[in-house]
Image 1 (cartoon, rainbow, N blue to C red):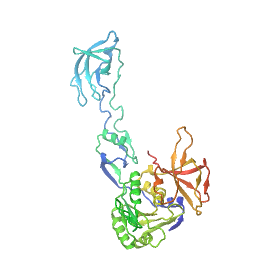
Image 2: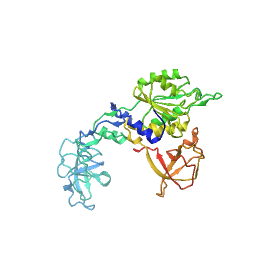
Image 3: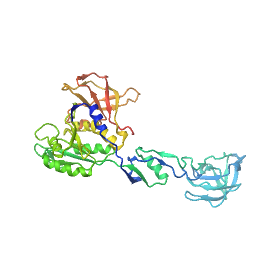
Image 4: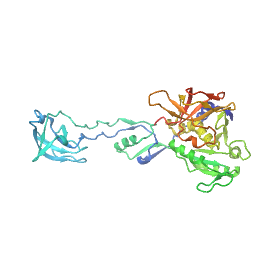
Length: 414
C-alpha cells in the first residue's frame, strides 16, 4: 500500500488497475443520450430515401423553361399535387407541372422546381418567369448518406445529433456500453436533516448532493446518497450489502486519523485490498482507496472542497477509463494569474487552488481568476470554479501576471 503518494503516481497506479467496462445494453433512443456507442453503425438506407423537393413550390421539366423571361413567362399545365409522404401515380410530361411540398418525393419526369413565392398560378396553369437549370432546387436520393457507410463508430459519446442520425437510419434502439453503477455514502454523526433547524454542534451535509451532482455532470448518475454514522461495524455491514449492486463506491468523511475516523477500520473489517493511504498534496491528503470484490472503494475527506478536489484529481480519471468516457479526461493548461496570490505557508505540500479560467475577448492568453479564501471547508467560493491551479510546495506568493499551470475541469467533448 502506498502512503503520501503523489498525484501522478496515484493516478498511474489506479489506472493500471482499472479496466473499461465491457458489458453492453440495448437502449431505446430516448434513453441513450450521453451513452457510449458500443459498435460501429452503418447506414442501412439512403438518406434521403428518394429524390425530393427542398421547398414548397412547383416541379417541372427544366427543358420546358427554355426562353422564359419575366416579360414572356412559360406557361405549364398543373396536373397534380404531391404532399410529403405521398407519391404521384403518373409521370409528368412535357409542358406539365405539379405543385409539390417540402420533403415530398419528386415525381417521375421532373428534374427541377421553383418556390411558390416566385410563381404565379392562374386557371390551372403556372407561369415560369425565367429559364431554370436542370436539378435546380433538387435533392438527390442518398445525397446525405448511402447504405454501407459507417456513420457512428464504437466509443462515440451519443449526442442529440447522433440520435437523430440513428432515427433517420430507421433505428429505435442502440447498443451502448453499460454505465458503472456508483454508490455514495457520507460518513459521520455530525449531520442535521435538511429543511430542519440546525442542531447544536451539527452541520448540514453538503457533500452528498455536491458529489452526486458532479457525477451526474460527468454523465454518470449515482445512486441516491446515504449517511452512515460513526460506528465501524454498522458501516461495514451496510457497505458490504451495497457492494453487491454497485461497481464503484465513493465515501466522504471519517478518513483522517481522529478517534472517529472509522474508514480505516471499515476497510480492515471488510478485508479491502488497500492501494493508497494519504496523498502528498492539499487539499484532500486524507484519502483511502482499495478494492473489495474487485471493485473500487474511494474514501474522500469530509471537507467539501477537499472531497471535490480529490474526486476531480484522482477518482475522475478512473471513472473516465472505466466508463469509456474519454471526454472526462482532464487537460493541463497554462494561464496567467489575474491577481496576486498569497496563500501563506503550505506545510511543505503541493497545493491545488480552485480557480476560474477565462478566455479574454481580445484573443489574449488564458487567464485564471482565484476566489478569496482557499480553505478546504469553504463551499460558497466553489461557484464558477472550472480549474485547479497547481502550486508547488515551496511557493507561497505569486505576483499578478505570473504564468501558472492549471488542470482544466471542463469536459473535452463539449
